[in-house]
Image (cartoon, rainbow, N blue to C red; front, side, top):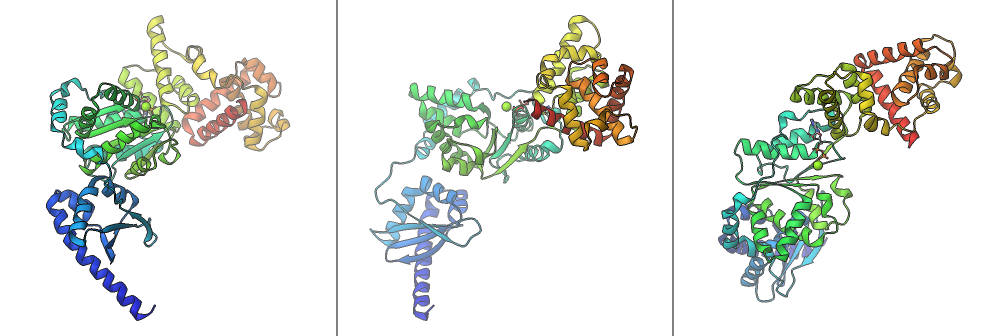
Length: 479
Ligand code: ADP
Ligand code: MG
């Protein structure tokens, strides 16, 4: 690089610094201190060439935010400081790489004022909603609290993040907090628990839980009845906003736009936002890029299907809460068979409790199996003894002859017992049929095998892992 170039670059940089300092003086007088600190202090003036000022912003989000909220102020300011034809160019820092000059010119034509500002100052609309606030419940269900949520490896991060958000709503780096995972894994429960905890500790005034569908319907309704600005004002004054199942915003462009503006207003005001979704944000389709980029701004925490121990703990907790006790083998039967949905675990318990009170008798394993036939057999309806034979042989690396043969070697005996146990649990076969299938054994041998594995299941994590894996493979095979 020749000295001339570097000195002219230097001059451009100094000119930019001087000009930008003057701009900041004007801006500072026009916005509140918090916003100034957040949005203007991090900006670095890069160069001033002619009347074109280049500034560097830390992220795409930053750029969009400034464009969205401070366009008019910025334009006025640079014209004042630099001259009538002043232009502003942004250079956005892309992640870790050095400045990647995504140069975006500030439009010369005045753009339509974003709705955000109009509505923020719409005192009337706000007052209207304030005075009607009692009509708005928070829609929190008191049943969904942290105390009734069982923590396991499957949900540890989500749980910890939710608790932390509930302690300091808005003032943390988890904003928004996105909880994502499959159906019935506790997203709604955790999201609501945040709301309930914040309310109990009075850490925020206006707390609102809303499903994506309700939000969308209310929004459409507001447009149809000419109350859009009231709708917006209402949401912009919430202190903790929980939106459940945001995947349903897909392809709803107008609603997304509204969410975008609400998000911006709340986020800037350090209000907490909690979202739930049935998949990671990056897998959402039909959503505006700028909205997705905001959703990934805080923390995304996933909820995985619970492991066996967690399933047991959940069942035990639910029994406690309902004041019932069921025999251990029944609880194990449920925990072993309902693997991927906590709502279904609960469903089993409720069904059993209803049966017990209806028939006035205690629940034992045979009755439980009959009562839960629809729920539990469903997933294994197609499983046959042949499939079990195949999967067990593959898993333990044995031949069918080994499995059915007479050898009493320990690993063979275990595989055989396991096959019989699965046969009893997953098919409708009698002890006799199972015995005949696995090497012509009599029914007492099968009963012994089933009992032995059930006992092991209580005591050995390895056996539980084997059972889970075998069942998973069988379910896939039986699809
Ligand atoms: P999602 O919103 O992910 O579909 P929910 O939050 O509605 O799932 O959970 C389904 C049911 O399972 C609820 O009744 C909830 O209380 C219960 N549940 C889910 N996860 C847990 C957990 N870890 N501990 C206790 N109950 C849970
Ligand atoms: Mg839910």
